[in-house]
Amino acid sequence: MDLSFVVNQVLTGLAGASSLFLVASGLTLIFGVSRIVNFAHGSLFMLGAYAAVTIYGPVVAALGPAIGPWFAMLCAALAVGLVGVAIEVLILRRLYHAPHMLQILATFGIVLIMQDAVVLIWGYDQIVGPRIPGLRGAVTIFGLRFPQYELFMLFAGPAVFVGLWLLLHRTRWGTLVRAATRDREMADILGVDQAKLFTSVFFLGAALAGLAGGLQLPREPANIYLDVRVILEAFVVTVIGGLGSIGGALLASILIGLLQAFGILIFPKSTLVLVFAVMAIVLMFRPWGLLGRPEPQTTSDLAETKAAPPDRPYAAHLVVAVLAVLMVLPLFAPDYIVKLSTQAIIFGLLAFSLNFIVATGGILSFGHAAFFGIGAYTAAIAVKNYGVPAGAALLAAPLIAGVVALGVGWFIVRRTGIYLAMLTLAFAQIVWSVAFQWVELTGGDNGIVGVWMPGWASATGAYYYLTLAVCGTAIAVIWRAVFSPFGYTLRAGRDSALRCDAIGIDLRRHRVLAFALAGTAAGLAGSSFMFLKGGVDPSLLSMDISADALIMSLIGGVQTVVGPLVGAAAFTFLKAYIMPLTDQWRLVLGVIIIVLVLAFPRGIVGFVNARDWFSRTVTRSPIPAVEERTA
Image 1 (cartoon, rainbow, N blue to C red):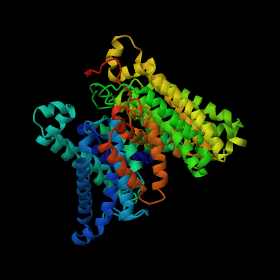
Image 2 (image 1 turned 30 degrees about the horizontal axis):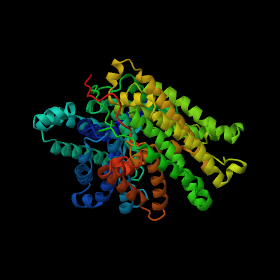
Image 3 (image 1 turned 135 degrees about the vertical axis):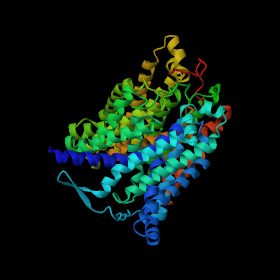
Image 4 (image 1 turned 135 degrees about the horizontal axis):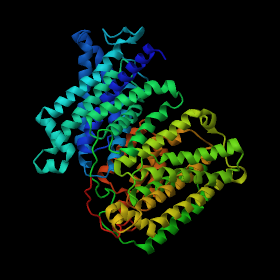
């Protein structure tokens, strides 16, 4: 590479880093103060692009081409900031002390609502934004032409960084923000009005996202896919830089921008993997990020608030009744209902396995879809490429997923809380990237199709019974583990890791084994789903599948045993019957999720089970929870 080309790539990478910093800085600011993991931040970025393209024409016509474009960007940012205030006041303010899982699901519900809201207002077609007058040409740098707007974007990020630094270090408001970031409880004791402070922080963070969306418009058309793309990159930057560190966000943005600029030249088939691989490496060796600070460890926010004695006779009768209905279902139900029920059983196993590590082990995972997809791809590749019998592939695939989960778990369970969750997300995105780009093995975005069960097992009713048998067995194994000494040890570690360590419990080994068991079950669900659909594609590895599993647990009841099974059935049939009724099914689903999070955080089973009528709750461990404060 000659010098001029290297300089051009550096400038391109820095321009991309500057744009990424504008989004990540708002996300970092919001998390640093509120501790809310805001997955809706990408939606605010998307909304900023649409708002800017809508008001651009009238504003430029009124103020002229010199001032109009910049005033339009500012108006878009302010409008998105007000939307952020509405989200904070109406929804997120009620979740500051809720478990991270509920916060994430609430923001995911906001994402669904905003996606359909954008479609209702602007439609599905992408909207090409206007070029900024005075920045339409290019300049010559070392003999190569470089766009003027890219050069402007290169300086926009550092300018915003300087402004944020001055705001945070030279104003009283900034002092309060830094105090709340460092210790919210102490700030509250000292009389800081946290409600107003959090609202102002959300306004600024949302406005920065809206500004980034508006400034992105001359580079990329406004479209409904901007939110998902940018939120993953913004989370990578936020985590690498350090949750709550504006300087860390700038440093991480530069690192990721340069990595993307040169990675496509050096590793053209690994660009999607590199970003998440870097995040995983940073989290492994410095989990609080490059410029972040270690946070005190506290009792898991997934611990139960009270013990609940099981109502065993009634529960046993109910289980027998449900199994009886499931056994005779294909005899009277149409094929469509039988297929939906098969899918509900499969997703019930997926949600049940995730809930096992989340509620019992306190291991919050954003990447459980990785093992679901690994199971599906392993079975499909084994049958399609190597001629392995379908039955053997169905049962061997989860073993591969379990081995992978064992290896991944050995690395990641040393971390806790949101850092562990981001590691699982990084792993899932790496697996998704490999499946998407390794076309020779996985078929790329086309996937692998035409893989079915042979002979008698291909019939709808027969495969239903096969799925009920294998998935029911896996659920029974996990159910037994929940109420075994192994499960009680996991709950002890969830509630008080320091006490477990003091009495000699190898908590890491238990968590690794639990992670491997959950991964094996998810792999079985994936291979079963692959044979049900007759193929596999990268969407089975996407974050949507992980989110669906979390939603199923929420709908049924996170802190109950059978809740994920009930939630999987409810979610599967809800989606099947809502989607045909309206094109805005995402909006309806998002509203349902938010209502459940705010009004029924314990889910269907948790709400009905106030007196333990329908299930045993995951009771508190024999070791009482205590608050831990260690650096």
